[in-house]
Length: 402
Length: 222
Image 1 (cartoon, rainbow over the protein chains, first blue to last red):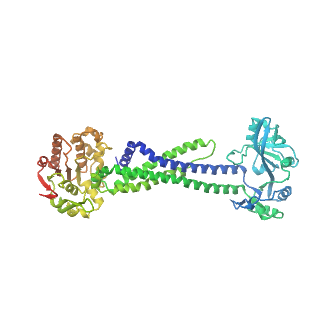
Image 2 (cartoon, rainbow over the protein chains, first blue to last red):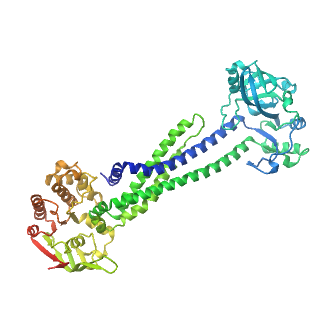
Image 3 (cartoon, each protein chain N blue to C red):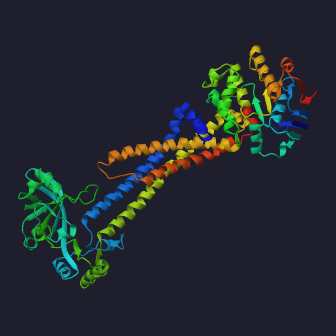
């Protein structure tokens, strides 16, 4: 029996004799650690989710939107952020003339009812051109994508996402050649895209989109305007330079505050910074419960010290130094706190395991290390005052205590 | 070995009430002695023992342990002396109930700062064997008799091979027969191992078994 195992054994015995009290005390730390770990896991999951969403869209692309909502990778508010202009076919031609651009796709989006027979689903329609496919990095899984000439004609043909196809036709493969009704327009499906994964939680569900030639959809876009111009930059071109080219081309017609040119990854970093800040705030609030848990430990440790005054006296009489007594009670409070932290961590893992079927939350190694480290730290910080009180008892007062 | 010179001990009971437990106590305990401090209850004999055993400090006067002035020792040094130099045996046995008999005997060795020349575990088993309680090694103190508990306390007092055993009413909680056995063991320790033994008691019958009696009444040696 060496010194440390001896101290641990002393502490564990105390817990086994006061099971209820031990559990209730560590419950405070359990709840604190669990809320911090779960919020961190949610934050990590959200970050990962956003990342995969944007990665699936592809790189080397730019978006042109009205207003100044995104500037220098940050979201901006204010009256100019939404923008008053809408792009039209003239702008489309302007951008198409820029040589460094591989593809220019105008996009008008609308959410509406897509139906086949009795099946109805809400879906986003992209009224666009065939250029949208390379920009968004979409490839056909079944059938084919519509072509440039289809885009110019107002052909009533559509390419849909595999999830929507499955929902409406039972099987993604069966959708090709079938009719699709979107609001009051009838389309014939020519292709189904490859799955992109993701979807849900307010993000764009890339597997449930409907792509149609924009001229076929003017009935719900009577102004013939576009909300977005999505472009793909040619290989080897510098993105900032291309951005400048686009801006200069559009400035001939619009004011600087009328539109923004940005990379989708700028939204990613903007979203990440917003959610990151939000997450830090939430974790900080949750950390308050850790402090409350620590106070609970301190309280119980004072009780324990009082209960053990006689024992402290005996130990001092047979040679324990002040530091020996200090360590004895510090170890006890650290074990108590660490026990709560471990339980909280285990519960968090269980909860995250079940949540993962709907949300990609996860607990990483730094979170585990920090959770255990913080639990230990709380044990030390809130245990040190009771332990100091125990150590500072004079041997004679302690041993005479009844 | 132990010298007390003009020692006073006062307790401040209240703001205005002080109680003097020891008055001008001067005594010497020589190495190898088997002595008793005898006096009625409230005479200050326990206080005297606590001062000799370094559990308490004198209010005034000088306490020398092996020539060293106790006042000049810090808390850690006093702890080390209690650990290595003194072995305590108490009236209430004062064992730690959550530890087994064997573990109780081993506790002082856990607090030892010096490297022991022997295996404390073997030493503990030897002592338990010698006191006839080896089969209780794994028992807990509250499961054994008072006499057995006092033997455990004696084994604990001896594990560090102290020079001095201080026994505070060691037979006080025991029947006469068991008490006599404990006294016999203490006598043997003195005789065979030359350990200095000081017993505090209020019973002349117990004091008579020692070779030197120090009488104390109202805090004064008489």
